[in-house]
Length: 308
Image: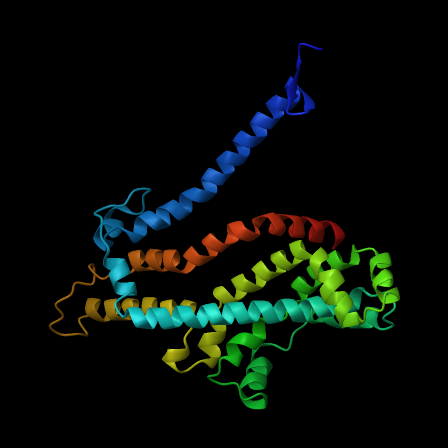
């Protein structure tokens, strides 16, 4: 055996390949650490005092350890719990409905025996280039559909995405036509073929698109700002957005002496630290959920990029 060749597991690897692996892993680890540093600074800032952040800026370690930002967030815990419940229910329902609708649409558009599939594909693609705009959309939801101050105004806008449709379609197209034809010969209808043949084969695409949809619902605050008036229906993101705005408004009033006899200094009110704490509160569940779909997510993104 060549002295410059070693065995890595059952595969023979040259030393040059091993050196390349070491460099690649070291470089990837360094990039991961660079990406992690901002999140550590956010975590550190959430446990620092507002005065320390104002005086010294952000750092990797907490300055003048304080829980004031989290006390402000959870000042009324049941309100936060209600906002969390609203967001979780919307995310779960929207992800399930969105996956079903987009998978069924992608399956139809991927069928070569569907005569109008190119026409419908162009229709969907056209909407990515030109849209009706904000005003017609607002009129549609508030006057035509009468969804003002309704949970459906938060659910419907994010159910369908053309980008997710293209990812799903490219994955379904990779499934051999012989599988669908065999199912048809065995007596399967279209619905049974979709759920018993296609669905088990597209788990990576389902995980990828499902994560995209879930993130869209979880991070959505804009639709709540447009359509929701009752504070009991606020999703988490918009509720936290309102908290930041209230703190900043109160801070400006104190600074301008508009509130006479105020006993709270504007410097002591958590503004920057509150934003950091809100970031941690919001991103926690998504960070915990991502490892469970990471395997399928990477595979789905790769196939979507190659086939799309």
